[in-house]
Length: 391
Image (tube, rainbow, N blue to C red; front, side):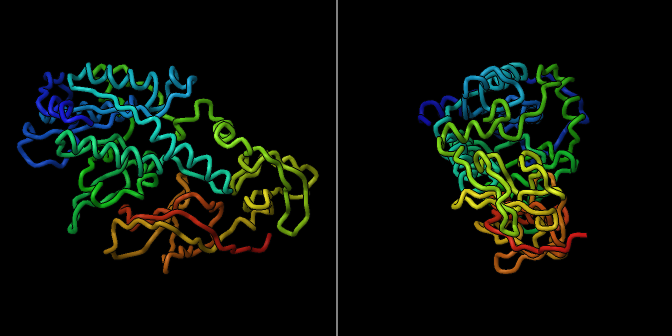
């Protein structure tokens, strides 16, 4: 970012924001006086980040909205329900105009393509199930956007994520959102302590309906806008098409093999399968339901078996990130974004479940909790079978 541009923003003064209800005052955890503070808000064009920008401006601090243009797949340009592209960028700009703050868009499309989309394709080709939202948070959102906010002299970077930042005895802690249905802590396990010190999550204590009420009270056009999709860069939900575009050999077929060694049929590409999948196997005539147990990328084989074969006793984690080493009490682990945390132990990088866990897929994350406190997590590199007897 050019020094002249940064200097221009540092001396920009916002117009007064229109008032909102006095009861709606989530905490930005900044020292007084707030009118001497500067907050950069990551604006995706959705209702959550738009409300964060409005609440930030309400504090009296100087607020600057920043949007990263991350992709543009043609069909996504005019598509709502995504983020960081096309109509969503225009929505972010309209919100900024409405509440009277500066708004700037930065093109990070090539960086996003190389660090997130290409990695997404490679993970599927390797027989793993990727989580692009985590990779995005680790890269362009919580690294590049951080640098932009710091270059602008901001006191903090605020986002619309539904998690809570709690000031603990040893510094800032990451906690699950007050509304379990909206909690996004699973996708933020790789946040570093330095990033957490700088981040603010003002929506973590609010239910989503109240966030929409704030947007409606402000007269924001995004008040009823649908939530963004989990995989923002897949315009139509066909992730296999994205993988094929980047890796033309993704559709190479192979055998569908039962765990007992029998070959049951052929598949049209491993990118169409993930651990725990039941539908779409196209191997009729089997007496019992079969599930994808694992993917053999080297042999291009899809290994299937009964549900009992999905049970694992533990998982090997890689690249573990710790946010809360000093904790007391039981440990729980969440191994899928929609799963509930389950009792577990972590021993020398091995996550050991108190009871067999199902559908644990390499490439996904295992996020560790002590109650609502997010301790960190790691990537699932492999699993250990806990084959249980079929009832």
